[in-house]
Image (cartoon, rainbow, N blue to C red; front, side):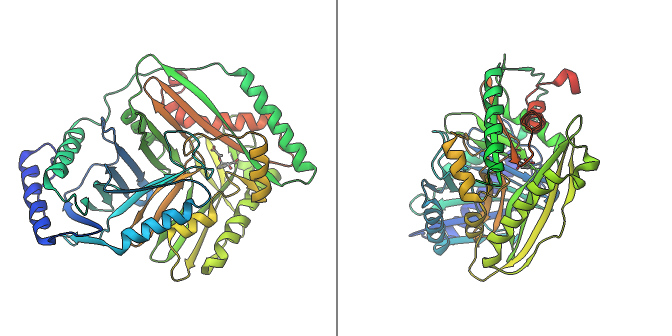
Length: 460
Ligand SMILES: C=C(O[C@H]1C=CC=C(C(=O)O)[C@@H]1O)C(=O)O
């Protein structure tokens, strides 16, 4: 085990290189598939995303003591269209079948694939495939009190030097302070006309719900921010991390530069040792307006909105679970100024069911789509709902055994240069009032607005 972790320390890097070289020699010739080498390192500070890494995938769930940072790709599958789940499952099964792992220090940690997918089966824009899974060439992770590095190589590309080059880039990024205080102040681009179009769409949805065509549909909107100086994604992430420790923090580098990042309050699904856990999150109140947090649990409209999500998740899980626990009533989840109705569902999955099977069955839940799911998706398609990137899809990780966690991509933005595009939505049910729903989306934008330096003077 390496005795000290000072990423910029040549002694550390020298020891690491020697140990990796020995592990590669020990592994022998890799004729097909993937080789991962995991080395324990002393405690890694991963509560912040390091700055200046243009190929990073960062995922952190502080409440579970879990943080991941992946760089590069030893293997990747991008999948588009209605068959995207089949394509992902086939590719993942092929990796699993020939994935050699040298866990040199017996960390017990498996190598991981990192990935995400969008709301719709087709890619929404050029920066994001509809779905992607990637085995990072270098993975830095913290799991409770274990910290480790995993290097992964594809057959035909088992080479020490490129791996160490990437490691040195990571080391110099981690040696920097996570965020030089960014006194960024951004301004919001005008979009009043867009607000009135959105209000009209909510009114249309309410009318169609009242006519019985559907029970619920989630409508989303986006706003743009600009700043005089480029946003620094590491600072934005540090701002999110300061305020949203109960959420899942994520940052996914975009191929043409910039980052898709956010602080999600909702796990779509987790799977560990055959036990699955899912958040049903729907029904919202916020400070300064709306149903107050105190009334949230008694509010009929929010209760209706929430029940549809619980019911739908339970319907999706029941056929693949040997045991399923569905709470009889939600509890209030308080996240700063936002308050949600939350129900945690848990179950034991049947043998052979992996995380990708669960994601395929669950997505999109009525927390991001609507109910009945098909009627809601048709309604959204007919009304031109267009969601950028992976917003209302999910971002997460899977281990080589097919278990892992994906968080719904909410409370997020695409941040590139001096521009940012932020997203928020609201569930529309019978009785929804358009201006109230617009105010709800404004409340849901606040976490990212704060993190991007908007409203700084008013609130900080
Ligand atoms: C679609 C969003 O929130 C969903 C998740 C939680 C609560 C929701 C609600 O109360 O409407 C939404 O269904 C969003 O934050 O962009």
